[in-house]
Length: 320
Ligand code: TXA
Ligand code: MG
Image: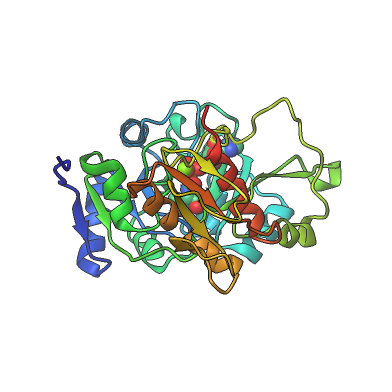
């Protein structure tokens, strides 16, 4: 039997946004569209509100959240920006780039947002509905992807409702998201003049190549540390076995195609990687809902945003 759905669906209108702002102000949760995936938002300055996010997602408390800000001014009240960070914000914000920076001691943020880390992840989203919402409120929004922990991220309001159901009291229905993959996350280390480097913590729509043009080559990782605690191998799980680099399909497989290799769902018949990124989670949601017990995915080139697509697919294929 289908679960009873009591999630309030809000239109992306003045009236819908006023209602969303009211729920958020009172410490409630609202799922919101961004240009990457839908986020499950709560006011980042309230411990109770942030605890609500972890509870609704079933997210482990050691996995910190991204804070969404309306502009660079609001961001600079939460983290320490050096010239490099400001330069990146000016070039890529609003947009799908998350900066992990040292948190300010006087930042008005609930402790659970950063899960005890001395750093904070910040992003200024480009979606007009999310921007209009941030303009209405005077606090930043903590928002992870609006799915149960480890499940496939939502690119449509329906995905949010299917994954979270009544755990998510309201969703702003803003249509399918454009980029379709979560933001690129980078950490800036120390100050550049003191030899500080940077690391790519999660590949995404802003490519490594684009970042290297601004920051130079990535500096070496401290391999023994899991830097983005959410980037554990098992993640983005469609709940069934998934086979990568498949040239052909077995009878019990739901086939996700790309380019000339057509499937039950084809990421981009034209072989366009941005279109493929935008369709990836929708295809994974279809594959999860299909009656076939397995999933196979055609090869995806490892260039540009293809790196981020393959990163998510490898995680989706990990079953332990
Ligand atoms: O596109 C996105 O980034 C979406 C939309 C909603 O903005 N959000 C998103 O959030 O993907 P989430 O919670 O699913 O992923 C956030 C990632 C996690 O892997 C988390 O561990 C990492 O960001 N993270 C957050 N704060 C961090 C910090 N201070 N240092 C390192 N990693 C951090
Ligand atoms: Mg997520």
